Length: 306
Image 1 (cartoon, rainbow, N blue to C red):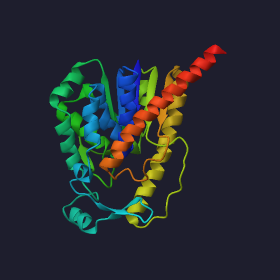
Image 2: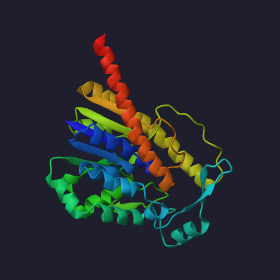
Image 3: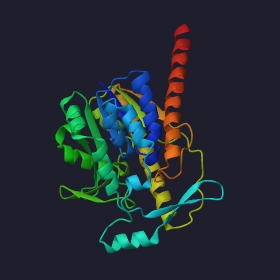
Image 4: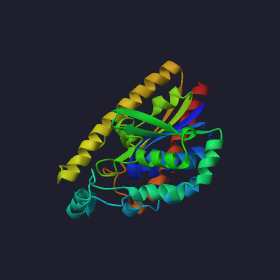
C-alpha cells in the first residue's frame, strides 16, 4: 500500500504541488492513501482525482483576499526587498468588538474550498478505492485527530479541510461537534506515522521546510512578527519530532519512506500569498522532484554495477 503525505506550510504548498505533479504525471505513481496537514489538506483531494492542472491554477492565483474574510495584518516591504507583516489595528479591533476570539477570520477560504472541490468530486473519491485523510488539532480535548473522507458527508468534510488550515490566532477558531479546532500542524505537521498506522508500506513525504536550517530570523519588529516567529519555532520542533517518530515507526514496520524537502528557503512568512512567488515555487517543486529522482536512479545504477 502506497501513501502520499504532504506537510503543512501555508503558501509553500505550491512547492508541494509541483513535487506531486512530477510524482503523479511523470513517474506515474499510484497512491492508495493521501494524508495532508494544513496546506497539504487543500492539495490531496485534487491530487487523488489526478486534477493537477486544476489545483495548480487555484494555488497559483490565490491572494490574501482569497483566504481571509478579515485579514489581521498588512504586508510591508523591507529595505532589503523582503516582506514583513504588521498588525492592522483597525481590523483587529473591529474583529474583537464583533466577539471574535482570533485576530482574523478565514471564511473566504471555506468558501473557496467549496467552490473548487465539488460534491460530485467528493462522491467520486468517497466511492473509489483511495482514502483521503486530513489532520486537525482538537484544542478542547488536547489531541490530534485524523478525519477520513469515508466517515463524513460533503459539508462536514469540507469543514475538516478548512479547519486543518486554520492557523490560529490569525485565522478562524472553529467550534464543531462541541469542540474547538485549529490547524492540524499544531499537533502533527508531517503525519507519516498516521499513514503507516493506516497500512502504508511505502510513503512519499513532501516536507515544506529545508532539511537543514539555513537562516537566522531577523529581530522582531512588532507583536505580530513576534507571534509568527514563536509559532514558526514551535512548528519546526513539531515537524522534526514527527519526522523522527515517522522514521522510527517505519523502521519497525519495515516501511519505506521517501522524503522530499524544499532545497532552499522559500519564505520566512507562509501567511503571505503572492501569485508570482507561488507560481515560481510550483515550477521549482516540479524541477526539484525531477532532479532528485534522476540522482536516485543514477545512484542505483552505480550500486548495481559495483
